[in-house]
Image (cartoon, rainbow, N blue to C red; front, side):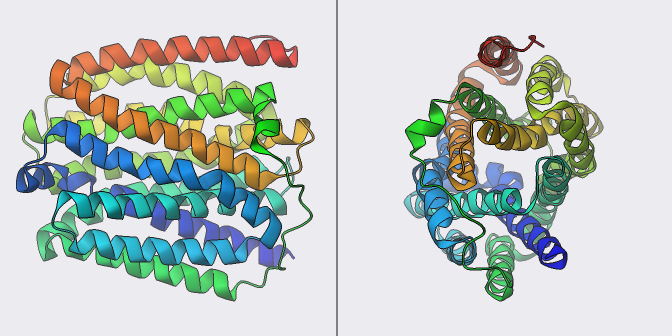
Length: 390
């Protein structure tokens, strides 16, 4: 079983890695896309946000389905869907087609993340989940580095289609891997748990709200920072990709460390503390004046982001287990729904505020809101569990 577990972790990491590339590979080419299609920053924000619409719609049903039929078939189908949607993105030359491709990518994302992390939770106990999920996130975050960096380079070398065709090939390869993986038809015995039952657990609801905050903040920063670096700092696609890539490299090293800390101290405490630190340091990005300063200041920002992401994954498993809910598929479906809500409001609101307020003012408005919500969630979840506030 241990070799099968190791191969499963490797394939889940590869699948989420590929999904992140599909999501982020367009970041360095956003300014050019905006000019070529005559789209405003608000429209580009909506294009990124549309990804979250189908993530929101598909995550919980897909988690429940995988609880019933097993993890293999949903993972194979999700990666094949990702491959097809990325090909569509490569050949789309109008905004409606781009929106359609982004929506299908979101559906594929829902399958990959929900079922992949449910499989990890099936195979590993609570004393190991943080470490293993940290390793998965470390490899996945490498996709943030490869996506923008290689995406910008491939775009300049081979045109707009080449980066997306490469991602489509990777997704098809991942589907073949899961088709070959010797998993049983079902990954253990699972209950059929309604979503409303899971949501009634206060700690699960608090974890989901924290995921909305961090997901929305990350999704807000990516497109508006790319637009700011192009319009105000004068950076091209390759250098914008290097800024995101360097930060992702640092983040990939931090995820396993924060996963191990979460195993010892609990995911809830680390998640809430990371949200506050993230909000406090985020306004420093408004002080960017050059390529070098952009790379350095964004590196500072990704440290607390990593401090939230991996612990929040273990937080959801902890909350689900303590509540006696026997459905990791539904729990991680809810996790992905929360992430999708963040993907919806983050780029949309961020693009609108960036267009009307500017980059610095956007950050100064956003950060206090994150701190206020985190304090409220910490208080509420602490009361529900009868533990001291952090």
